[in-house]
Length: 318
Image 1 (cartoon, rainbow, N blue to C red):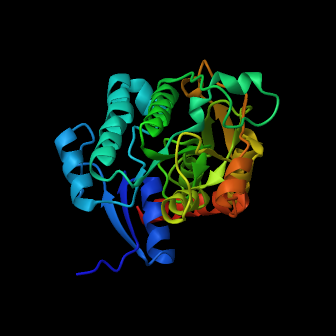
Image 2 (cartoon, rainbow, N blue to C red; image 1 turned 90 degrees about the horizontal axis):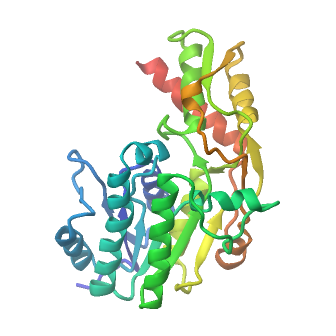
C-alpha cells in the first residue's frame, strides 16, 4: 500500500508545552504529514526514555521519519540546576542516542535540534546589540551548558552526515505554559489575586532584566517549516529565533497587572533572584528570516493577554 503522506515527522517531547503547540499546528495546517508523537512519563501512551538506546533505535527504525523534531529535554533552568546530572544525561546523552539512531536507520531524515539562547550565556555581556549565530556559546548555568553541549555535538555530527538543522530560540511563552517560567508565573499569581484566592501581593525576582520574548505559536512555525520545506541541512544550518526586541521584565509585569484592573503590591522575593543573571539578552533572527522566510507574527500584547486569560479560567474552574 502506498503511503499517502509526503512527510513522516517524529516528534520527541510531544506531550510538553511546545510539543502540544507544534502538534496543533501540524494537525491544522499540514494535512500531508503523518505525525508520530513521542511523549514522556508513565501516563503517556507513546512514552519513550531517551536514555534507553534500544527503545530509541526501535522507534526510529519503525517510524522511518523524513524529519525528527527533538523537543524532549529537561527544559526549565531551575530543574536543571536542582538535578544537574539528570539534565546532562537527558539533554546530551539522550540527544546523542536519537542522532545516532537517525544516522543508522533514517540517514536521509532531517534532524531538527531545538537548542536554546541560554547557550550564549556570557556572550550577551560582550555584545552591544542582539547576538547572531556566530556568537560564542558561553553558558552560565547548567541548563545552558547542556543545551550548548548538545548543540555543538549535533553540529559536529552534521560533518559525519547527519542532516541537521539547529535552532536557538529565545524566551517563548503562551497559554498552557508551566508557571516555572516568568510570564506564566506572573499571570498565575495575578489570576489568583483576581479570583480572590490570594491577597493582592505579587512576589517577584529581578524586574530590571531585559529579555527577548516570542509567542510559542511563532516558534513552532519555524520547526514545522524546517521539517516540511525543501531546505538544505548541515553544519551551517543554525538559526536564532528571536523578536529582536528586548523587553524589560518590569514592563511585562505592569502589562499583566493592567489586565487585572486592580491595584497589586509588587514585593521582591530574594529566593527568585539569580546571582549570575544577565542584564540584557536579545537575538538577531535575520538568518531565519532570509533562509526560512520566518518572522514572528503574534503581537506580544496578544500573547500576554492570552496567558493571563488561560490562568484566569483555570483559577475560576478550581
